[in-house]
Length: 372
Ligand code: UD2
Image (cartoon, rainbow, N blue to C red; front, top):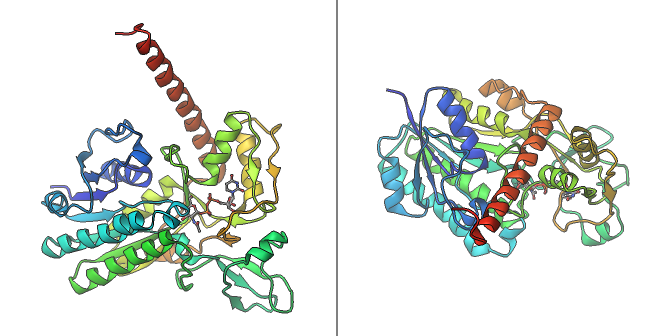
């Protein structure tokens, strides 16, 4: 009998792609998801994109009874259920702590009673804060948070004490966390709690630190979606993308398909137990480069990005992944190039707009009594 895998939060962006990846490899997939209206809309229902072979339980990971029920007959668990807005976590503190921290605690208590062969938890690059830097003499450096004064002066980049520029380098898992949001704190908490309980109760556990994920099914209704989808949506609506700072900040944009593959490998690789892995593309692009590439794939290079010089408080300057560990231990190799990934994202976004218009048109017809 094929292994049965539970994905909490499996109706969401990352979880549903993981479900596809697992089903394609012959696993049976069960999803526990509360179909949060912020992600799934005001009248939540099973998302159309969720594969018909996925067994869906609509329920909350904070509900003990529901979690116990979902764990019956399950061989492995992916814990992806979480509230995911960095900015929002700074005012909905109770909600984020409740869903992310307590939700994980409830799941872990249930797992102590009903252990599984593997637990994989979704963590985030946000817990690094700024990425790792190198001085001109080659020494590695960690930095803190840029001050508001510095940002007001449009002094974007990090420098050493003697004013020489610091160069960003790929960030490895060993970089100490620098938790700058309730969200980042909750992700760190989730990964530590899972690894700790996993170790104590012999549940082989793996934590995956995702970098900037993108791809079809990104929750566009969620105002906290990433820069790629924001730029693409602006271009599709004939608006110029708006770039903060000078656009030279760098990130690691990783395709959701590569994330799904890395997560499957975390299930199938015995040596991954007890470990933490960065999941990125291994490439870094500036926000400017990204704006250009999206405009190119959409054929809207006429809509040049507007470089505002404004800034978002709490933004980091650079962070991109060192994926050497995932490569060597998991045998992970990113397969989706940025151009292929963006082309697909853009095609999907165009389809989304069409669907929205269709829904609106149908509603209008219905309101006028023109449809049955
Ligand atoms: C945040 C989260 C990360 C994940 C991600 C969503 C942190 C440290 N991390 O990462 O965990 O949730 O969001 O993919 O907060 N930008 C523009 N114009 C725009 C929007 C963004 O220039 O219209 C810039 C922004 O200032 C930043 C970069 O694009 O420098 C990336 O922004 P983001 O919100 O996509 O992601 P990031 O890295 O802040």
